[in-house]
Amino acid sequence: MTNRTHTPENATPSWKNWSGLQQSNPSHYATPHDQSALSQVIRQSDKCRVVGAGHSFTPLVCTDHTLISLDGLSGLVRHDQNLVQSTIYAGTRLKNLGPMLLGINQGLANQGDIDEQSLAGAVATGTHGTGQNLTCLSGLVEGFQLVTANGELLECDRAQNTEIFTAGRVALGSFGVLSQITMQNVPSYRLKEQISLVPLDDILTHMDQWKTAHRHIECFVFAHGSKALLKTLDPTTDDIQVLPESWPSEDTLLTACCEITRALPALSPQIQRMLGVFIKPTTRVDWSSKIFPAVRETRFNEMEYQIPAAQGLACLAEVVATLKKHKAPVFFPIEYRYVKGDDIWLSPFYQQDSASISIHQYHKQDCWEIFKLIEPIFWKYQGRPHWGKLHTLSAKQLKALYPCWDAFMAIREMLDPTQKWLNPHLKTLFLG
Ligand SMILES: Cc1cc2nc3c(=O)[nH]c(=O)nc-3n(C[C@H](O)[C@H](O)[C@H](O)COP(=O)(O)OP(=O)(O)OC[C@H]3O[C@@H](n4cnc5c(N)ncnc54)[C@H](O)[C@@H]3O)c2cc1C
Image (cartoon, rainbow, N blue to C red; front, side, top):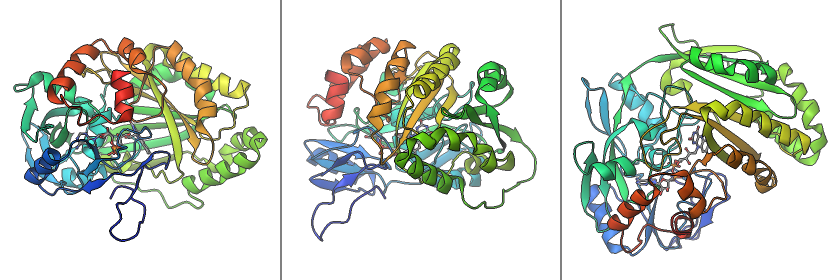
């Protein structure tokens, strides 16, 4: 279910995103259960947006008109064992996809931090995990079915409607509704996760070598404590090894720290210096779909930019130094990951191997106080923002970052001459 607030019977529910920052009041909420019902809703609506799990931080899905959820279009359509591909209904949540794929001996080649998202929502924004040789999820798409503004169904892949396929893998719901997606998977696999706390200086000195030694590597840097939680994931044939439940959980601790430092920001450095008391080195082994997602119950808002990989560590060092210098009131760590470049016109990783840097702010604190401090640093390093995360770039600035911007807009206009899919946020992003 997407996040709908409780309203009196018969009243149209208002809609909120995961962090609660974005809200809107759609005049109509549609949950079609098959492709013809989906086409009919689209034909009957002058303006609409489509929502996945509502986990984007930006107002991508906000609308006063029709909001379409694909929760009713979920599950596996078919699979090909020789090609290791599967065709999946676009509304499928990643957390349900993991067990489905495991059942047919397949797995997603990579995943992000959580698995609450719908497959289409994750694909539409270029959602990614970490690994210098691994693209974002959109880069793993082999084809999709698109329901266009006039309700027509288009098959798009490398052989048919190729330009729509190339551009439409990251299109923010501006080309129409993806109803089925074919993913290039890999045979199911287990991963060994290793977590430890290391000095930030070690990250800055050794990350360039470490990133080549592990299939996945990421770190969470605590800016006021000069330490980082380092996480690596590598394929293994070891038996499943589950960690005993710890109390308090990492998430409970994070909420407590955010509450304490919200009231008393000066305590952040002391608390972050004591992290070693709580964070002990751990190792666990499980199927990939169980290892990738973490529990994220402490709500936050987030800004993330993709920086050319070679500049990533310099940019990270500058972000940390700036937060420290300004005694910025933030407890959340900075997340640092790697993503391989791709060929998707509006992918933030278009023709660019990237280092991905995210800053988070507890949902009860003003995120813009720190985001405004850090965003110019991302610009300095030619960063491209994550489409689902907060940023302030306008159409003119975005166009300068994307060589195929005009070609994308030409296809968007051809597919949607009446701007059925454009809400105010997309108008600002695309039209200025
Ligand atoms: C706690 C948390 C952790 C996160 N971790 C990561 C991470 O590790 N890596 C990362 O890259 N991002 C991460 N994100 C961001 C998130 O993955 C993206 O914002 C993603 O788009 C959310 O998916 P969703 O299903 O909620 O899509 P929504 O937010 O509901 O929609 C996103 C976009 O997709 C479009 N869309 C949805 N369904 C369709 C469809 N069927 N056809 C066409 N367009 C569609 C929507 O119109 C919208 O433009 C995280 C977000 C949160 C809240």
